[in-house]
Amino acid sequence: MFKSFEPNKIFAITSKAPKYVLLLFIIILTIGLTEALVLSPEDYKQSDVVRIMYVHVPAAWISLGIFSSLALLSVGSFVFKNKNFALIGKSLAPSGFVFNIIALVTGSIWGKPTWGTWWVWDARITSMLILALFYGIYLLAWRIYENKEQVIKVTSLIAILGVINVPIIKFSVDWWNTLHQPASINILSMNTAIHASMLIPLGIMTAAFVLFSLLIFLMKYNTELIKVKNKGLDRL
Image (tube, rainbow, N blue to C red; front, side, top):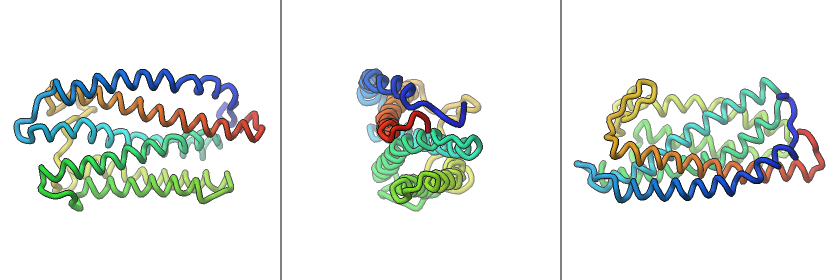
């Protein structure tokens, strides 16, 4: 089951999914933007600047989640010798890279009014920049190497090595004295320092970004499946 997959059967499902995901994304995004930009209150210290959070935080979460997924898929590729895991990883990486850049840019914009500077070599920011480099190297490797077996090995190693940076990003604000604020939400302990009036739009915007990431993935994955089908392969 893990050693092969049938592109025709998978494509029959994934080719129909994007239009439904797009519709759901538009609905959730509209609700999220209304909540974030209109209904949610100003912060008592940062005023309307805090609204950058509704883009910055979900983008950071998704970029970390996708890279963690790349590492898991890479391990699966090594263990089960399943090339489809690598294909899924290749299709996921572009959206992860885009959200990583969005997190860095919005963080810089947020930093100017709150810290007085566009950029500092803060532990959290620097480790996020390193993650973007890993994303870039991962995507570049798929373009450089033509041999399928070789590119899967190289990209898998990049993802597995790069995932070491994920816990560093997560705990950097706890391990070092940084300008970046500590985590306001702790999923494991179900604790949050964010009021429900801000937490709800943050959750909705995160859901919208997840759907957008899924949409990019499906479009990329379907393209990869078409390439497999054009080669006349029933199995990979």
